[in-house]
Image (cartoon, rainbow over all chains, first blue to last red; front, side, top):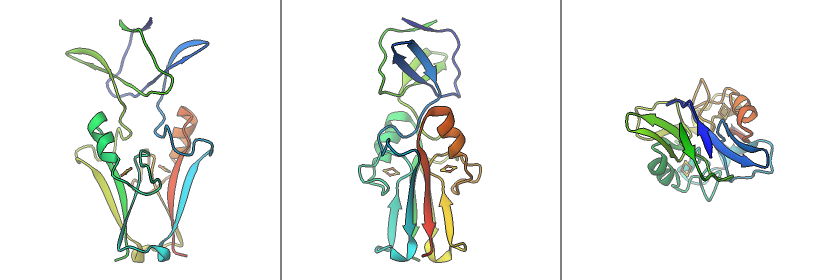
Length: 91
Length: 91
Ligand code: FES
Ligand code: FES
C-alpha cells in the first residue's frame, strides 16, 4: 500500500497508479471535456447572443459545455467548492 | 502514515488532514478565489465591453479573476490539464 508521510491541508493532489507505481501530483480541473485539444478555448461573438441572459460554464462539469447546465451545483455539493458560471447579459 | 490500499487512475482526490485524522475526498476546483461566497457568479453586460476581445478565466487561477491573466498556462503545465479562457468578441 501507498504510504503518505506528509500531507497538507491547502494543497490538492491526484493519486495516480501506473506500471511504475503510485504517485501523487497536482490536480487537473477538467477531467472529461475535449481532452484531445491542447487548450480548450471558446469564443462568443456577443452581438450574436440570442437570449437576454446566457450562462457559460466555469466548472468543467457541464453536459452542454461551454454553456452552463447547472452541474456546478452537484460539483459544489460533493466537494465543498463554490464555483459558478459567467453570466452574459445583453443589457 | 496514511495507507491507501486501492487507487483509481481516473478519479481525483484531495488528501485532507484535520484533528479527526486524514481523509481522501473529491476535489474542489477553486482553492483561492472569493472563498467566503457560497457560489462565485459574475455578470458581464456585453454592450459595456470596451475592447474588441476580452478573455474571461475558467481555470480559477487568475490573479485578475474573473478576467484571464494567462495563469491557465502554468496550471496546464503543472497538472497536464487543458483548460483555457472564454473569449468575448464584439464582432
Ligand atoms: S455547469 Fe459549470 S458552471 Fe454551471
Ligand atoms: S487565467 Fe484562468 S483561463 Fe486564463
